[in-house]
Amino acid sequence: MNLIETFQPSLRGRADRPALWFDGRWYTFGELDRQSDAVARALVSDCGIRRGDRVSMFLGNCPELIVFYLAGLKAGAIVVPMNLLYRERELTHLLTDAEPRVLLCDPPRFEVLAPLRHRFDALEQIFVTGAETPAAARGFGELTEAAPDTPLSVAGISGADPALMIYTSGTTGRSKGALLTHRNLASNIVTLLQCWQWTAADRFLLALPMFHIHGLGNGLHGALASGCTTFLLPRFHADTATELLRREKCTLFFGVPTMYERLLEHADAGGAVPAGMRLYVSGSAPLSPDTFARFKTVFGHEILERYGMSETAMITSNPYAGPRVQGSVGKPLPGVSVRIVDEAGVAVADDETGEIQLRGPNVLKEYWRQPEMTVEAFQDGWFRTGDLGRYDGQGNIIICGRAKELIISGGFNIYPQEIINCLVDHAGVVEAAVIGVPDQRRGELPKAYVVAAEPLPTEAELTAYCTAQLASFKVPKRIVFLDALPRNAMGKLQLQNLPERDCL
Ligand code: AMP
Image 1 (cartoon, rainbow, N blue to C red):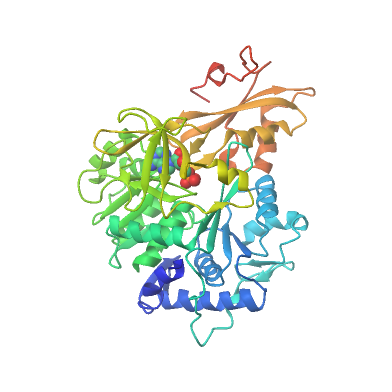
Image 2 (cartoon, helix red, strand yellow):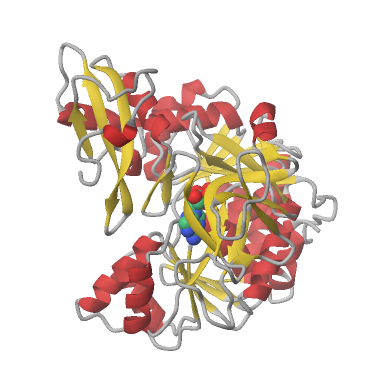
């Protein structure tokens, strides 16, 4: 089964029902279906997109993103979403690596992209949303013009065909494309609908960015597969979100822990608490027991915590019915097998910590054009998450840390090496180290330690340099200058000996 077929009961079966609310406008499932049919046809006939070609999206949450995404899937292309915050360095790497032939962006993102465009030979067409189309681009409206008379058939696309490529950073500091097939995504969303009892009766507030597996693979896919009504926000603000949850009598909300912190702050400051909610889900970063407990007191709901990754979509979940275990990410989803092993791949004792590995229909096909990394990502056929976990004695998994170096800030992943690579490219930096320091609101924040060279740069200069090169969430919030980085006798960096590791 391909992913579009899991959406068809909604797109066609509920064609006249309200699918989406965005900025005061309503869209039916039929409109999304017809528009995406038109765009799919235009991608094939006008842009020459063939099976397996990449098409990319670089824009904020909006209906055009959904239409383009569906169209890319219907055309048999591999859709490559890009993090909105990406800047020169990340864009150059991603577009050179994925080589999309067509890209959709919004006007602000076109401004960022246009000066770099000459670097991307494969990129033939850029479509831009909005009323005014820049001279060097084409308007998205052109793609939706020719409304097709007959529905497009997607029967030729198989479950094994690649559908989505999500870039995820790695310890090398160069992000790699996790290539997910139609089957990976379809099997995962069908399972989630069952586990979370998600139906067409739900009213879902989607405020997560759709360039990430959480917003796209859980949020949008679930909305389209269930046939529920979705209220889409371009970005999360606690006051707008609370207002919509209340006014539209929403039943379902997904967030990262930072969003739950913000909802609590809003309620603490006198904001009214929504009534009628059925389910709040959290993931992408650890939900602190404190946030879980305070949310239960103030909002009257136990947040359902789940665990997943770009490479695998969702892996585990707390139960919908029955108590949710605070501090645990729950049990493997039906069809997913998890093992917790030591470095040799041997299962650890029940109460011991090891690496979480999994097998299942949700596990990625490969890393794009990285056969060696694909091989390294598996041990005896099991996908290595790089996360450390243990069982709680009841079969629930507790994530205890990460074998991989990873900072999670506001639900976004930051691999220190990526920031280090950027810093050392600056003429005033000899070497650098980056760590995550605890932060109440965002979970962690990146802090850099730098050994500088003459002429010595200031912290402000290095911050401005990183801001131009990297997405804002990766820019170190503090840069400390050291004479030397702490190393042991073997020359190995001793991150634990860096000064003031617990604060900015
Ligand atoms: P991403 O590929 O951006 O979705 O990031 C995946 C990583 O986020 C995982 O490997 C974990 O390290 C982390 N993660 C996701 N969900 C959770 C969770 N509920 N608790 C702790 N860490 C999580």
